[in-house]
Image 1 (cartoon, rainbow, N blue to C red):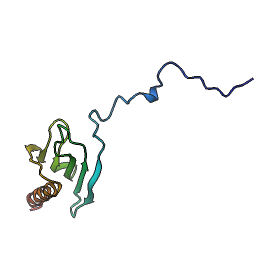
Image 2: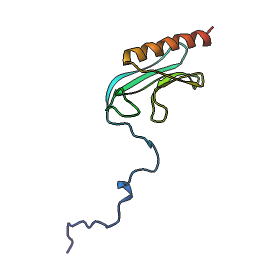
Image 3: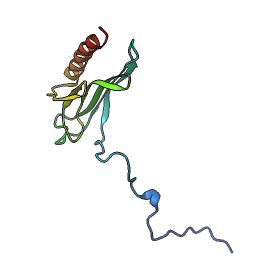
Image 4: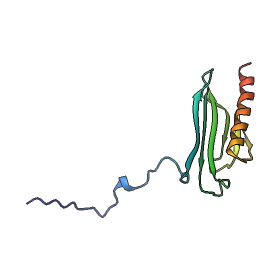
Length: 123
């Protein structure tokens, strides 16, 4: 007579194991405080994203962020603070330190660099 009992294997189900690919440094749980993404007049992608997160060694100010301008598949300007490098900015393939003070200042600095790079690129 059939039963409705499901027997569990003593082996771990492979679907229960963490994936062997993807993010190696997961972001702490955070609250999205900024997200804007749009395409500019020449087809460049501008995206600004920031999360308020618990303070950690890699985010002592309590924010994780990524602001980027991509044109024709190339990152021309970027500001971010991923685990290995902390706060920094990108400009045409070069990386420079960045001192984070606030989200408002971050956006202002990014938009300032964006204006400069657009003048260089479109003149």
